[in-house]
Length: 125
Figure 1 (cartoon, rainbow, N blue to C red):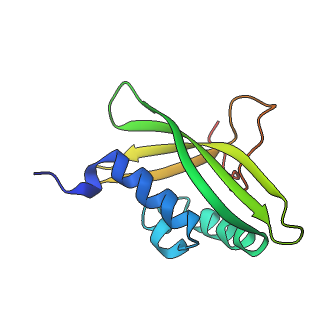
Figure 2 (figure 1 turned 135 degrees about the horizontal axis):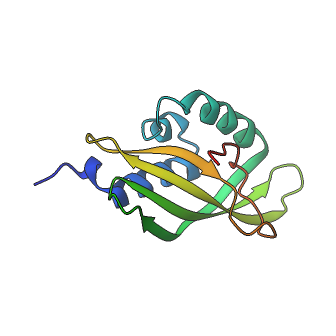
């Protein structure tokens, strides 16, 4: 039986739930080392200003090669300064390294009118 870490749904849930509960070190275990410093910096900045209320995986699309995937994720959060509740989405890129899935990017949604999540900072395009 394959290790659960090799399964995309497990990676998606583990990363995004760790983010929801502000467990940055647990979330960073799922991040490609090439982008982990940037994502770690963004976590610190975002966690200082907002509290994540909910996270929901809306859509997952596998790449034709079966080694990449893109997931549309919705975050709901409130700003700690004024307690305003907001929600927004991001596209997360995932790659199967052979040892497990890792997050390789967080991009804005393709719809320019859509509200962005507070974590969208990296753009591979």
